[in-house]
Amino acid sequence: MTAFWLGHLRPALTAAALLFAIGLYCLSLSRNLIRALIGIELLTKSATLLLVLAGAATGRTAAAQAMAITFIVVEVVAVVVASGLVLGNYRHHGTVGTAPLDDEEV
Image 1 (tube, one colour):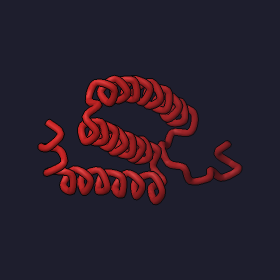
Image 2 (cartoon, rainbow, N blue to C red):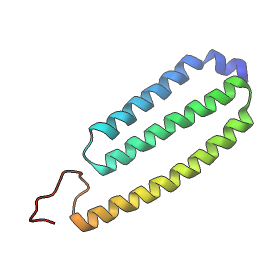
Image 3 (cartoon, rainbow, N blue to C red):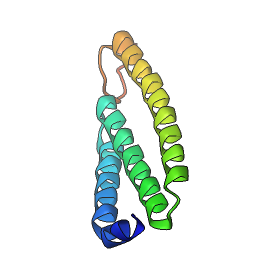
Image 4 (spheres, rainbow, N blue to C red):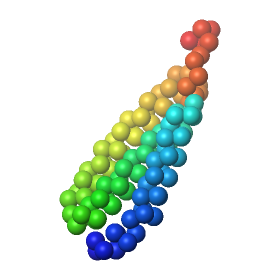
């Protein structure tokens, strides 16, 4: 199995780098909180892919899979909490944007 991953290392690293770049773009340049959450998801999926790839390349697939599952569970909890905060922001302010509100609207 290790030989397979070493032969396909460059495409997997390219996919992880592409996911990371798109996630960073969504997170840094978007003023919409939903897009920011999607950016965070893409960043964590990139890290998960790299974690599994590193485990497969070193021959420690069991440890990498256990760490990836733990990472996914923590990520889901964080995204659920962040989604709750976005929903609360929408209910309070009526928008999912991050633009400052006028003094009259507060």
